[in-house]
Image (cartoon, rainbow over all chains, first blue to last red; front, top):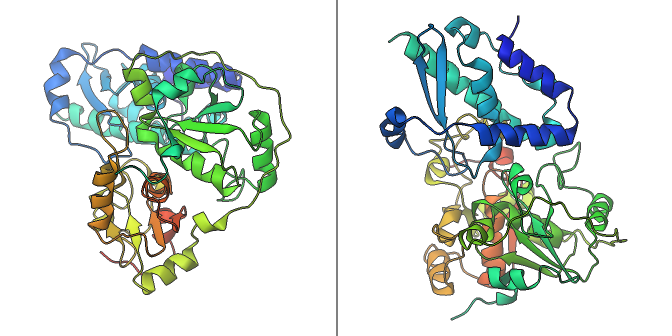
Length: 143
Length: 279
């Protein structure tokens, strides 16, 4: 099974990086996450409060003109790791079809060896955001 | 009324005045490990709860020898004043402090307000990672008087002695077994250890600037729930990080003589076959 090409490229890039390059690149992704478009802000404000340990991740999906799905995210700057992981997913998946998104396995990130940089435990943020994205993609596709 | 051991706290002003003090080492310990790379207090080193302080294989902390290596690498001696600070109201800073105490480092402080207050005051954050000449650190302990294991937690529960569950109310009630989207830190069962009282950790800090509440407020909070200084107290949460903040408050700010952190916490208890659970 193959990943959407953009995501595959990111995975391959990370696989060849040193620990320091991974850290810097992840920070770069965290900083590159665009602000949430105005049209989603009302929905974000209605978002249910999350338990205290968790980083609040707001995520919206919409269908682009070309038919692919696009994700919009709002994650506080105090949580650069989750921002970085979510930005990688958004960059890797934006424009993909529902089928492509649903076929991304939950452990797709293992070859990136990001645990060298941010530890195994925190990488489950990837699984969480991906599950969230799949859910939102299904929902927007059925609308 | 003041804190019983105010010497365990320093404020941002004090840290700013000791940035170049060779007898002081500032350590950042965060929930989010990238924050240090984005910017930290000048001269501060990073000690990450997961990648630095955990045993590489077992579910445990570093051994004493491994801890000595970490301490030597950040260039501290047994006399260095070590100041911890971090994100999320100093959760992980308290966790790291607790582990330094476990291995006998006595001279420890928490930067009151942590990373949040330092940022709010517009104080400098730098990306430069400092390096210090390595030392030959000799650890002591471990000091098991501050760490509780499951058997003594069971005894404490059976004897109806003070147990403090510092998780959020929904975790205490069992409505939430683990954080949504965080399956790795989950448990098979939800609820709390029988006879534990619920005092969420966050009630001990001011949300606005991450500083600790006043001695009066803290005393009212814990004594109001029957957690007093005359008995041994055990605090727990999910993996032991939030409860080390509560441990710090009870032990140093309120001066309770016997306080332990149960670091196995809910991720151990909620998976333990035959362990009693209350919902």
